[in-house]
Image: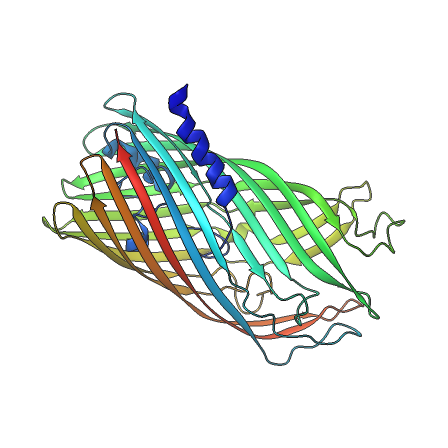
Length: 424
């Protein structure tokens, strides 16, 4: 029993440190291991370099020998500013400011453990955060009736199994138990005054992931990986200091609520090639079915079955393209670089103040130092250039109107990741 204590400790750290920040399309998080950040996660489904392959492609465990434990920590600093053009205030209310910097600093950990059953079968478990989001404006900003704070947290527990069929083919399978918690806050327009409302909900959802790796030649392999959607039926409550409607069950702002959220499936195709004794080339294309996210509807769970709020999302499926290279400088030091182009799921016609992202370009650097035959340290850094995001969100009807958000967003992000890997 004592040997299990480190695992439980690291799971507790995951829950206690976790803050959510979306750095891929929509509110997905690619930060599932620090070794891949230096390559902008190119080749993630094929490289099978360490136990983080449990998330990207469980079949990759067949390329790892013995027992391995891996811990990673990612620091993400985002910045985002809104520039007003022709916004209109909510009915009867002053316009307000531009919201300040909606970015912040977040810390996101991952943990993986892998061991052999025999030469053909491997098992492992991963704990990470595949989805997350946080935007927060100043409370008096001009779009406060649409959004002030939007936060989604997830923790995914992912036990996995890998099977090596022969020297060419490996297959993997995993199950996902994902905890999700969401919080949405906004101001309430009372025309002659203002109040506020806080919506909170949480749930466990379940899914699976599949993967295969084909060894084309001794120096080249291809990886294909699929992660299923996870349906979350969030339950929680809505609370507001405005109590004028409390005697009307179908209109009260203080009640239990439910909201359905479908976290999308992904499909990735990766390649890894060892060009010579020094150079490695990695590529990846990842498709995400964001069209699953059609609307966000919050309903009262007090017997009235009425809607607190509903937003039509109109999201699009996305592709992410990445390429990276590794250079083995010495036997113990590997240098990495990579870049990626990441499409956004939201177009200009349907962007809201809650998720104002846009297409982004990743530029990444990293290094791997083999401290001993059993222990490796990785570090990675990426800067994300986020394309200017235009918004025209008109909610002046029905009365009392929430106003019009008309302007643009400018933003960027920096990611610093560190990883410890130990073989034993």
